[in-house]
Length: 398
Image (cartoon, rainbow, N blue to C red; front, side):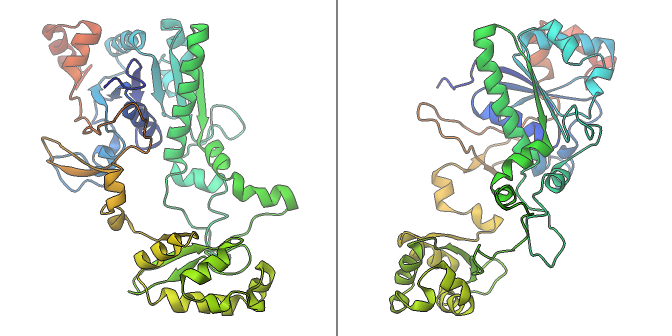
């Protein structure tokens, strides 16, 4: 089936998470994504957190599906010329090197735009390419810190914690993908490419908009309130089992309070003046919390959230990562899939969060290091077997 981006060709010069997640999403949508790695082992995540010597780590696998891979030594003249040849072929380049690195190699935006004026050049940096802090390096947790995510998460009497979702890294990769698609669309009108510049700090600040709202409205910082709701009643309640993840989140906004009481068999509290409105519930938060907790501790988190959710109330079980991979709902939606790899064998992988009605995405294995050197050099650049042997001998490819 012809996919949305089947005619888009991408060179992915990225590593770790922010850049690879961008190339991966473009690949999921059908683009031909070629990961270009150095000749010294490539993306460090191939070995970071690895638990087998004969296969890439899951850290690498989870961000590099649906790509091809080659190696190229961009510090050599031959490597640079081969790379420029691939730039003439490409629609998009994505990179997340430290600021100025490609410029120092003579492969910056100005040079590559001359090679291919239709090129979309996407760059992801911790603090962007301009501004007083732009020389500083960044990664996931730095972006969380300077973007406000840490200062608004956790309990007020504890240090600001790091959060688990990759809002800085993956958030930046997905934002870059949106920018690339916009630039490709404009190129249809102008015939010219442009630069897409992403700051990880900018991305986290953008994702923080809801948390910044009280500051805009009231002029003071948004304090950390842990799992408490806005009016002093917890949103997370313990469930049967008593394990570290045995909790259910309940958020009975507006009419949801009476709906929740009906769902948990406490209709006797509907109309109770102590809980008549949010102000009264805030004054009697301990009693309100006790009434809910008495019920939730008699049910598993799965039972609790499904009963409450069926009652029309916002709720959810606090699933851990092991439980997520076993959820029937995610399996049916192909958000958890099985991937076949001739080296590792079948393994579980995260799927594609975008579902398009006119096409289907099959998640393919991440490429092995330099797996497509020969085929890419032959089909795209017209190199011969002798050429390729010479490149290997001269250290241009691995």
